[in-house]
Image (cartoon, rainbow, N blue to C red; front, top):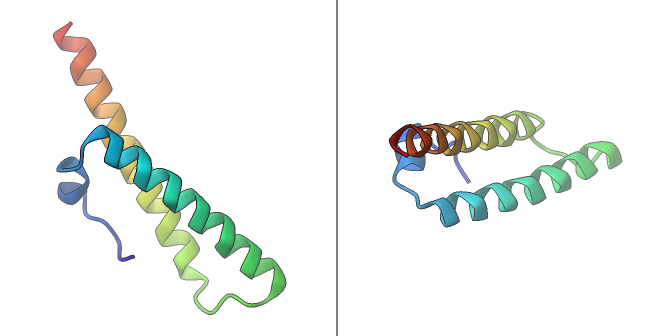
Length: 71
């Protein structure tokens, strides 16, 4: 999976975002396991996955704050 842009993330529904985060966390776990066992080919992938998780969580938080402001 390539780096997701913020515009792509904003077009996802909340359920899709949660699903993406869960999948990325699982991928991150596997990457860390590969790193520990010396099988990881691209160590920068860990960095990319962590940043993508952070981007999704940021967009989720923005939507929460926007909804709270309307209420």
